[in-house]
Image (cartoon, rainbow, N blue to C red):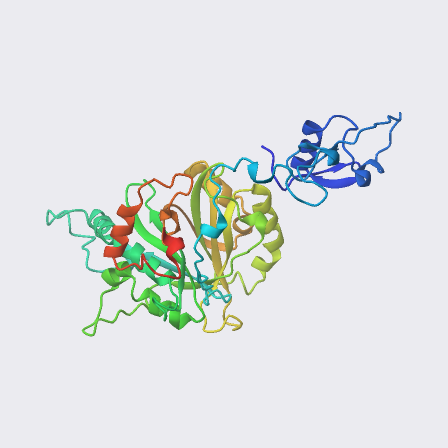
Length: 393
C-alpha cells in the first residue's frame, strides 16, 4: 500500500511518491514543463517538444490553453447573461446573512494529561467474591458486568456534557474527557473496567470531574452529603508522545489493544528506563502499530515536580489477535531489559464520549438523525445551542 509520507528521488528532487506517480501516469514523456526538475535530469538524447499546452500538475491534470479562455480581455464572460447556470447555483443576493459564533477552544488543553484506571473488582467491596457459589448467588463478576452496562449510557452522557462548554452551557467545566475505553476480560465476554484520559489544568479539577462519573460513584459510593471520594482511583500523569510516527489509525492492520505496564521500583533509580528509551522508541516506530503511547508518571500537583517520576507505560496499538499483542509487547526493549514489573494486555470497546459521530451526514441530508437529537435533548444535552449547533447536527 502506498503511503502519503513515502518519498523518492525524482530528477534529483525529493517528491512524495504519489506526486511522482501522478506525473508518470497523467503526463506523456517530455510533455510536462517543470524546469526545476528537468534541469537535474541527465538525458542521453535530446528531444525537442513544441506545444502551447501546459499540464496543470497541482490542480486537476487538465490540458488548458491560454488562447482558449472563457473570458474576454475585459474579464467579462463572452456568453453574458445567457450562460447556463451551474446545477444548484443560487443568487447570493437571495441568501440571508446569518451571523455565527465560533466554537470556543478548550481551555483545559494546557499540557496536563491524566490517566484514570477504573477496575471494578479492586474498587468495589459490595460483591461477594468468595462465598457466592455456596450461597447459590449469581457469579459476582457477571453481576459487576451487568451493573456497569446499565450505567454506561449515563457515563457517556456525563463525559459528553463535560466536554461541551461555552457561554451558554456548562461554563465551569475544567476537565475534558479525551477518551474512555471499556476494558474487556481476556475471554472478551465481560467488561472489567475502563481507562479514561483527561485533560485538566490541575489534578484537583481532574479528581472533581472523576467524582461525578456515574460508574465511579456506583463503585466507590457516596457519603451522606452526596460526595464521592475518588482517592482510591489510580491516577497518573500521562506524557503522551505526540510524534506522528506513533499515531497510527486504530484498526489499521489489526484490532485496537491496550498495554498497561508498571515499572519495577528500582527501574528509575538504576537508570535502566532511560538507558533503553531510544531503543524502545525505535522499536515502536518501526512496528507501525502504535495508536498512542507514552510513559506514566506519578500524579503530582505540578508537572515539573521532581517527585513525578516515571511509573510505567500506557501503549495503545493494533494487533492481529491476543497472541500477536503479547508477542509484540514482550519483545519491546523495555520488557526485554526488565524495566517492567507487571504487564497486562486488554482489548477494549471505544465509547463515543465526544458526540461528534452523531453529526448529520451532509452527503445524505435526508438521513434521519432526529431520533438521536431527541434522545440527547431528553438527557439534557444542548441540541439547539447557538454556539455549537453544527457540532451536534
